[in-house]
Image (tube, rainbow, N blue to C red; front, side):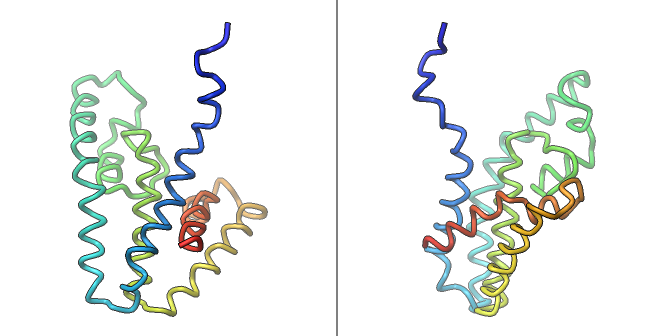
Length: 168
């Protein structure tokens, strides 16, 4: 009467959390020396783009075509052209991405953007990170959780990227 491997699989839901912390760690470890060197931004952006978008599009585009071919499949937002654009670019949206698990990539791209801005701004950009962390904590306790886009920018899961940076 018990699912196989129940005890072994009990905590596998922490994979996303580990991935976000690891992402913050790796970005900091590899690109901290780029901060303040705006000429390094294009290399940083190209490396981030090639790791995320091409493989993601190889999955997203056939899925979108399937939703076009079978209009009754999925949820209505998965058929919306506007959601396709947001999903294609991995931009935050009030609707879930067409490929549901891509919500993690939306946060990842957001974090890459924040770190890219720090590369461009320079060492003063580091000051934004503890302020962002404080805003996330404040929003977690006192903010309007249904308010868009604050519920994305100040989502508690963003702390995990910052923890990765601090560990690095």
